[in-house]
Image (cartoon, rainbow, N blue to C red; front, side):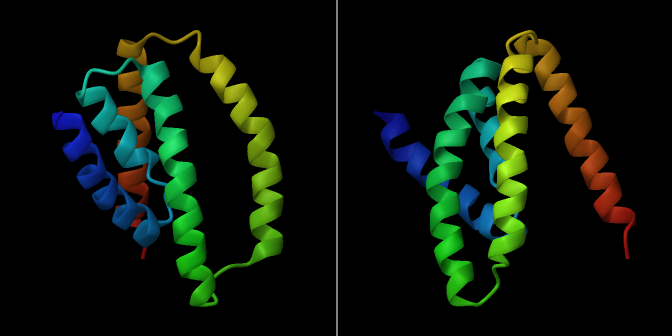
Length: 118
């Protein structure tokens, strides 16, 4: 019963973070699901479903503000389709413990990069 209330509340927070930052929400959703006890594989897959819903809503909001370059977005998305298929298969060969370390390194690297940029 707690998940029924907690997950939508966390979804609101992730939606705000995703629409504000453009990072898709996975950087927030995956750690939340890992903390909730999901395996890396289940956390990533479940995150993508949530991100799909959040992304559609964020796209509508940003479109209303004329902040969408459809040509570039579609080209990036087409490349992302290929990358997503490869990434999902690669993840099958990574344990949850190793995934947590890799994901943490990516987040720290991203944080350092963003922090040091003007």
